[in-house]
Every structure is written in C-alpha cells, then in structure tokens.
Amino acid sequence: MIRTTPVRDRSRRSVGTRAGRSTHHASPDGGYARRDADPTGPTPARRLRLLHPMNRYALPDLRYDYGALEPHVSGRIMQLHHDKHHAGYVKGANDALEQLDDARRKSDFTRLAALERALAFNLSGHILHSLFWQNLAPKGAPRPEGPLSDALVEHFGSFEAFQRQLMQTASTIMGSGWAALIWEPVGGRLLTTQIYDHQSNLAQAGIPLMVLDAWEHAYYLQYENRKAEFFQAVWNVWDWQDIGDRFAEAREVRIALVGAEG
Image (cartoon, rainbow, N blue to C red; front, side, top):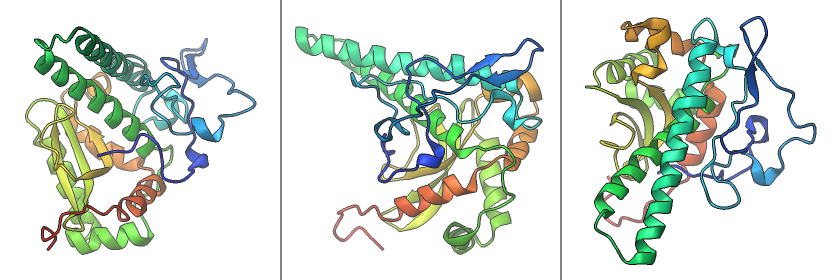
C-alpha cells in the first residue's frame, strides 16, 4: 500500500508531473544535465503526484541531474532507467486501465485475468520506481538519525545488522525484483521483504519505505554481473530524510483488524 499523494506537503522534494517528459538532457560534452526548471515551480497540487489531471499515471521528473549520483550510479543508467524503463511501466499501466474500461463498456471480461495481471505489474513498477528515485539523493548521509535510527536498532538489533539483511534480501532474489524496508502496521514493526518482479510476495498491509531495485537494468551497464557491488554502492546515496519522513507517516497508519494485533 503506497499513497499516490502525500498526507502532508513535502515541498522540498517536489517533482513535476508532465507525463512522459524529463527535465534532463544529454549535454554537448556527453554528460547529463538538467534543463532549466519552470520558473514558477510546481504548484502544491502537483507536488509528488503520480497521476495527471485526467487520472492517467504520469512519469515524475527526477529531482536531481542524471549524473548527480555518480560515481555510484552512472548518468547513462539513470537516463535509461528513468526515461525508458520507468516510462514503459507508466504506459503499460495506462494501457491496462484503458483496456479494462473498454472491457466494462462492452461487458466482455474474457481477458480480465490478463488485464489485471498487466495492471498489477506495470502499476507496481511505476510506484516502486517513483519511490526509488525519491529514496536517493546526491551525497547521501551514511546512516539515518532520530526515530528511524532508533527503530532500526529496535527491530534489527543494529543499523549494521539491518544493512546486511537488506543486502542479502536483494542479493538472493531469484530472477528480477526488489528488496524493501517496510512498515507492517498490524504488528507495528519494521521488516525487510523480497518483491518478485514488482508486485509479488509483498505483505498485504506492508508500507514500503525504502526500496532497492534488483532488476538487471538498474546496474548492468555499469556493474555487469557484479550486482553485489551495486547494492553496496547505493548506500552512498540514500536520502535518509526522505525515508525517515515516510517512516513517520507510516507509523500513523492504523489497520482496523480487531484481535489481529500482537
């Protein structure tokens, strides 16, 4: 369960919502730079939204340059990952919704199962990538502070133990998928989980706070088959403020399951 709009304004991490367009371009010297942003800036209603006004999903702009995460994640990978792979999931989700609408209008549900699978795959890919981009920042802090730091120690024993567990979660995924730190609101605890593809094996009430992309397209151009090196490198660019804010919001979620809580 991930909200497509925030509970409160996070204007410091605002992103645009122009569907299918990035604010970045390849510069003449081969680097990756950001185009001048709209001088008026995004309005509050546009901040951190994953839907455009016609209720179609939209590709959010990155909030940093393609090359801002180098040397840990190359600008070329960021460009392809965001503009091609993520954009493909946005298109796939919108296409699946249109086909579901068409099926309802015609009362023809012969392809319903396939369309539901397509929507789950592509929409989950869109949500996870949108979260991944916002989990990252140039020159990230080495570790979190405050309530998130305390909770990691409480639920994993130490920050180092959490780090090892999340790395192992990512490294042992069979095929493609994600590793995630989630808040499980029924038990009131932090957990790590493997997400197969984009949508399978996630605890139903679990709220992803921090996700690590283990698909080959996230690292192969730079790290080839050395995915463990990529998983290690990402620890240099985590935005712990973003993850901590998500943790603070997630802890306010209450699931009305009488008798199910420990």
